[in-house]
Image 1 (cartoon, one colour):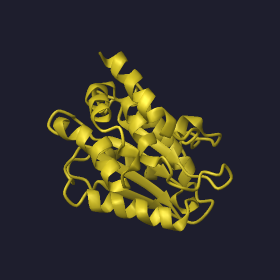
Image 2: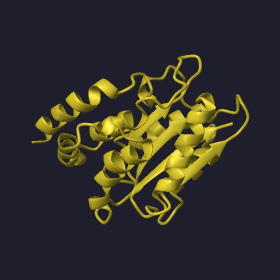
Image 3: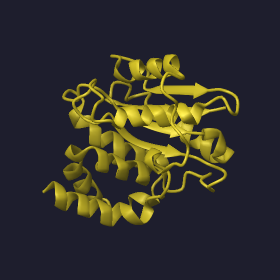
Image 4: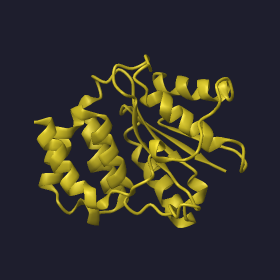
Length: 206
Protein backbone atom coordinates (compact mmCIF):
# COMPACT_ATOMS: atom_id res chain seq x y z
CA UNK A 1 0.00 0.00 0.00
CA UNK A 2 2.86 2.40 0.85
CA UNK A 3 4.32 1.94 -2.65
CA UNK A 4 1.00 2.74 -4.32
CA UNK A 5 0.53 5.69 -1.99
CA UNK A 6 3.92 7.12 -2.93
CA UNK A 7 3.12 6.75 -6.62
CA UNK A 8 -0.03 8.77 -6.03
CA UNK A 9 1.97 11.40 -4.13
CA UNK A 10 4.51 11.57 -6.95
CA UNK A 11 1.77 12.07 -9.54
CA UNK A 12 0.10 14.87 -7.61
CA UNK A 13 3.04 16.64 -5.99
CA UNK A 14 5.61 15.97 -8.70
CA UNK A 15 4.60 18.79 -11.06
CA UNK A 16 4.87 21.29 -8.17
CA UNK A 17 8.18 20.07 -6.70
CA UNK A 18 11.21 22.34 -7.12
CA UNK A 19 14.43 20.46 -7.93
CA UNK A 20 17.92 21.01 -6.53
CA UNK A 21 16.81 22.49 -3.20
CA UNK A 22 17.48 19.57 -0.83
CA UNK A 23 20.64 19.23 1.23
CA UNK A 24 21.91 16.21 -0.72
CA UNK A 25 21.62 18.14 -4.00
CA UNK A 26 23.99 20.94 -2.97
CA UNK A 27 27.57 21.40 -4.19
CA UNK A 28 28.69 23.01 -0.96
CA UNK A 29 30.83 21.17 1.57
CA UNK A 30 29.89 20.07 5.05
CA UNK A 31 31.90 21.17 8.08
CA UNK A 32 35.29 19.55 8.48
CA UNK A 33 35.50 17.07 11.34
CA UNK A 34 36.00 18.94 14.59
CA UNK A 35 34.96 22.36 13.31
CA UNK A 36 31.81 24.14 14.50
CA UNK A 37 31.26 21.33 16.99
CA UNK A 38 29.81 23.58 19.68
CA UNK A 39 27.16 25.16 17.45
CA UNK A 40 26.29 21.86 15.80
CA UNK A 41 26.05 20.21 19.22
CA UNK A 42 23.63 22.86 20.45
CA UNK A 43 21.45 22.37 17.37
CA UNK A 44 21.47 18.59 17.73
CA UNK A 45 20.52 18.92 21.41
CA UNK A 46 17.65 21.25 20.49
CA UNK A 47 16.47 18.70 17.90
CA UNK A 48 15.77 16.12 20.61
CA UNK A 49 15.09 18.26 23.66
CA UNK A 50 11.63 18.00 25.13
CA UNK A 51 9.48 21.14 24.96
CA UNK A 52 12.05 23.08 22.92
CA UNK A 53 10.86 25.99 20.77
CA UNK A 54 9.51 24.78 17.42
CA UNK A 55 11.66 27.23 15.42
CA UNK A 56 15.41 27.69 15.76
CA UNK A 57 16.97 30.65 13.97
CA UNK A 58 20.71 30.53 13.24
CA UNK A 59 21.94 33.92 12.08
CA UNK A 60 25.28 35.54 11.36
CA UNK A 61 27.15 37.66 8.80
CA UNK A 62 27.90 36.52 5.26
CA UNK A 63 30.70 33.97 5.16
CA UNK A 64 30.26 32.86 8.77
CA UNK A 65 29.52 29.26 7.76
CA UNK A 66 25.76 29.05 8.29
CA UNK A 67 25.13 27.00 5.15
CA UNK A 68 28.00 24.69 5.97
CA UNK A 69 26.52 24.13 9.43
CA UNK A 70 23.07 23.56 7.92
CA UNK A 71 24.46 20.94 5.53
CA UNK A 72 26.27 19.18 8.36
CA UNK A 73 23.18 19.15 10.57
CA UNK A 74 21.08 17.79 7.68
CA UNK A 75 23.61 15.05 7.04
CA UNK A 76 23.69 14.02 10.69
CA UNK A 77 19.92 14.06 11.13
CA UNK A 78 19.51 11.97 7.97
CA UNK A 79 22.21 9.48 8.90
CA UNK A 80 21.30 5.89 9.72
CA UNK A 81 23.95 6.12 12.44
CA UNK A 82 22.09 8.96 14.14
CA UNK A 83 21.08 7.03 17.25
CA UNK A 84 18.96 9.68 18.95
CA UNK A 85 15.80 8.70 17.08
CA UNK A 86 14.37 5.41 15.77
CA UNK A 87 13.36 7.11 12.50
CA UNK A 88 15.26 9.44 10.20
CA UNK A 89 14.89 12.73 11.98
CA UNK A 90 15.47 14.94 8.95
CA UNK A 91 12.07 15.45 7.37
CA UNK A 92 13.03 17.86 4.58
CA UNK A 93 15.39 20.66 3.59
CA UNK A 94 15.38 23.69 1.32
CA UNK A 95 18.49 25.70 0.43
CA UNK A 96 17.82 29.11 -1.09
CA UNK A 97 20.52 30.42 -3.45
CA UNK A 98 20.82 33.56 -5.55
CA UNK A 99 23.54 31.95 -7.65
CA UNK A 100 21.26 29.03 -8.52
CA UNK A 101 18.22 31.28 -8.99
CA UNK A 102 16.36 29.73 -6.06
CA UNK A 103 15.07 32.96 -4.57
CA UNK A 104 11.30 32.51 -4.22
CA UNK A 105 8.96 30.25 -2.28
CA UNK A 106 7.21 28.99 -5.40
CA UNK A 107 6.43 25.32 -4.76
CA UNK A 108 7.88 25.52 -1.26
CA UNK A 109 5.33 23.54 0.74
CA UNK A 110 4.64 21.07 -2.07
CA UNK A 111 8.37 20.32 -2.16
CA UNK A 112 8.64 20.02 1.63
CA UNK A 113 5.61 17.71 1.68
CA UNK A 114 7.13 15.56 -1.07
CA UNK A 115 10.42 15.26 0.80
CA UNK A 116 8.46 14.46 3.97
CA UNK A 117 6.72 11.56 2.22
CA UNK A 118 10.06 10.43 0.79
CA UNK A 119 11.86 10.43 4.14
CA UNK A 120 9.00 9.25 6.38
CA UNK A 121 7.27 6.30 4.73
CA UNK A 122 4.73 5.94 7.56
CA UNK A 123 3.10 9.22 6.45
CA UNK A 124 2.49 8.21 2.85
CA UNK A 125 -0.93 6.58 3.09
CA UNK A 126 -2.56 9.50 4.88
CA UNK A 127 -0.84 12.08 2.65
CA UNK A 128 -1.99 10.27 -0.50
CA UNK A 129 -5.56 10.25 0.83
CA UNK A 130 -5.36 13.97 1.64
CA UNK A 131 -4.16 14.77 -1.87
CA UNK A 132 -6.76 12.52 -3.49
CA UNK A 133 -9.51 14.32 -1.58
CA UNK A 134 -8.13 17.81 -2.21
CA UNK A 135 -6.61 18.02 -5.70
CA UNK A 136 -6.55 21.84 -5.72
CA UNK A 137 -4.30 22.33 -2.68
CA UNK A 138 -1.75 24.14 -4.79
CA UNK A 139 -4.13 27.01 -5.44
CA UNK A 140 -4.44 27.59 -1.70
CA UNK A 141 -2.48 30.00 0.48
CA UNK A 142 0.77 28.94 2.15
CA UNK A 143 -0.82 28.71 5.58
CA UNK A 144 -3.40 26.22 4.29
CA UNK A 145 -0.73 24.20 2.47
CA UNK A 146 1.41 24.04 5.60
CA UNK A 147 -1.54 23.00 7.75
CA UNK A 148 -3.00 20.37 5.45
CA UNK A 149 0.06 18.92 3.72
CA UNK A 150 2.43 18.88 6.68
CA UNK A 151 1.07 19.65 10.15
CA UNK A 152 -2.14 17.65 9.81
CA UNK A 153 -0.16 14.67 8.51
CA UNK A 154 1.91 14.61 11.69
CA UNK A 155 -0.84 15.48 14.16
CA UNK A 156 -2.16 11.88 14.57
CA UNK A 157 1.37 10.76 15.48
CA UNK A 158 1.99 13.38 18.14
CA UNK A 159 2.10 10.81 20.93
CA UNK A 160 4.01 8.09 19.10
CA UNK A 161 7.02 9.88 17.63
CA UNK A 162 9.92 9.67 20.07
CA UNK A 163 11.70 12.69 18.62
CA UNK A 164 10.44 15.54 16.40
CA UNK A 165 10.95 15.65 12.67
CA UNK A 166 13.22 18.48 11.55
CA UNK A 167 12.91 20.73 8.49
CA UNK A 168 15.97 22.81 7.60
CA UNK A 169 15.59 26.06 5.63
CA UNK A 170 18.91 27.63 4.70
CA UNK A 171 19.88 31.10 3.46
CA UNK A 172 16.53 32.78 3.97
CA UNK A 173 18.25 36.09 3.23
CA UNK A 174 18.76 34.89 -0.36
CA UNK A 175 15.00 34.63 -0.82
CA UNK A 176 13.11 37.68 -2.07
CA UNK A 177 12.13 39.92 0.84
CA UNK A 178 8.36 39.60 0.44
CA UNK A 179 8.49 35.81 0.11
CA UNK A 180 10.86 35.46 3.06
CA UNK A 181 8.68 37.62 5.30
CA UNK A 182 5.56 35.70 4.27
CA UNK A 183 7.23 32.35 4.93
CA UNK A 184 8.38 33.37 8.40
CA UNK A 185 4.95 34.80 9.21
CA UNK A 186 3.23 31.60 8.08
CA UNK A 187 5.53 29.43 10.21
CA UNK A 188 5.30 31.61 13.31
CA UNK A 189 1.51 31.87 13.10
CA UNK A 190 1.12 28.13 12.52
CA UNK A 191 3.01 27.27 15.68
CA UNK A 192 0.97 29.59 17.88
CA UNK A 193 -1.51 26.72 18.21
CA UNK A 194 0.77 23.80 17.33
CA UNK A 195 3.79 24.22 19.58
CA UNK A 196 3.70 20.63 20.77
CA UNK A 197 3.48 18.94 17.38
CA UNK A 198 6.57 16.75 16.76
CA UNK A 199 7.97 18.85 13.93
CA UNK A 200 10.47 21.71 14.13
CA UNK A 201 12.07 24.15 11.72
CA UNK A 202 15.65 25.40 11.54
CA UNK A 203 16.08 28.72 9.69
CA UNK A 204 19.42 30.26 8.76
CA UNK A 205 19.95 33.80 7.55
CA UNK A 206 22.13 36.88 7.97
